[in-house]
Length: 209
Image 1 (cartoon, rainbow, N blue to C red):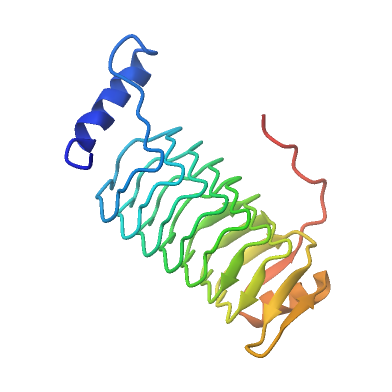
Image 2: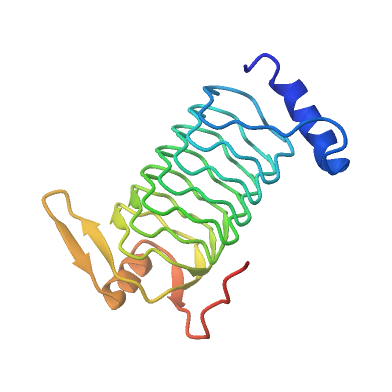
């Protein structure tokens, strides 16, 4: 399947451009795409749910509106990827590199992003509800109303990150126990990790349809 992937992507682009008159739709659901190079590909609205993308190169790939839920992204390179309004729920993205990524309204519900790097990422209304965020790096990230509701942290590195976070509760893994953090404790944790952040105090954003 991987061997003819570039041809399938080209066929999908024709399908999109012609509104279905030419080419064909591309489904990557459940496919084994370990180590594949999709750098710079245009995959707007793609559906690689439950696909294995471990070690894949997705640098600068356009994956806005994509359905990546259930995918495995262990060690994947997602530098400068476009994940606007994409669903990354229940993904395993341990040690993945999201540096410089655009994550506007991306969702990581119950996802494992431990060890992942989000350095310099643009995170607007990005949600990490119930995510495993142990050993994450958010260095120099731009945070705008991100939500980490009930996420679990350990050894967060957020030096240079700035912006706003939602007034959420979370958990801190001390190594010997996992303790709850109330919103004020969560804010203090981000500050201690090097971030310059405050709570978002305006009206919650209107969900996009």
